[in-house]
Length: 444
Image 1 (cartoon, rainbow, N blue to C red):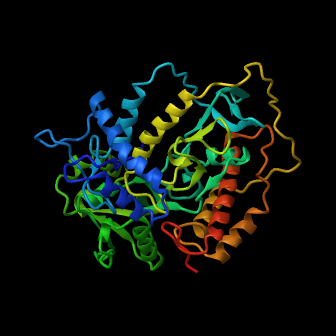
Image 2: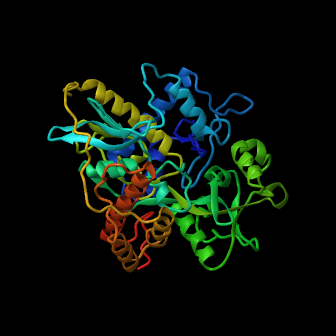
């Protein structure tokens, strides 16, 4: 829903899937799963064409031609948008209208996956009446997003608290590439707080990153302000550490308000005087995790009957650093593959299976304050890491007991426990990768 940037796909006459493929590998520092990446860029064309045939309307020019935007690390304009910077919102609404026979259970929180020697057979959840309950299922699909709540500055919704990753870990599903976390360079910030994302499409339209004196910060890189996100995020972090403020200079963008209506609305709500100064205050914050629950080409995890799709899944298409606007494409391509695979399988769950709702009793359970955890995560497993710092974080986490969830926890306590477990997993993965690669930057 929050995706502003759009969907990358090689639909223009000048573009090819091979070019999109190569750009994806280059951004991912060749750490990508090449087969999965080919599936993404080739089947992505088909998915977008099907959406267009079904009536999805992307932005057009006055002659009715699709408008293709340019974003960081893309060699050609290939980003489709909907209502300027509201692609995620309109795409989600369009796709959901195609659904039927869906029973939505709102205001519930899934606590854990139900598993036995045969695989996953359901979920345990807290219902809207705050009662612990369960639901049996032939198949369970995780689509819970990433790790935004682990950090103080995030482009994610506040509900994104690593719950799916923690549940998968407790269910003994294999996770991969958890050290690769993308920090988006341009989160709107005011008084040290984040107020949403300023899309990379703004830089694609011509904006540049400057400090408080107007000095252009990305002049030393061939792609300048459209360099891969990990490079831009590190440069902006360096500028902040040196005491500078960072801004997006939008003075060269004509009709900014018309091209970016959602961003404009947010800027007005936060009383940012951008129409006068032509500058937007920004700084890096967590945006996307390339790693996650390891899946095959059809979304199957290492636990039978458990699938994962979207940001929580590690399909391998993003490598060590995601290419801009590939995430919505991944959801479409692999979402269809997951659905197709499930339809081919047969349900094997015993509907009369008895579930023990009593979670394990433990004598001790302790977690830190959420804000303190976020501060520690930002300091030690943020944009840049060191062995000493990451070991410090693991030692700090050891004073708490969060691996087993007792009964009668609040939803907030469960979220914080999940974030602690995720922080531990990320830190251990980052320690094991002793060299810098893509979004994983080792200062030592």
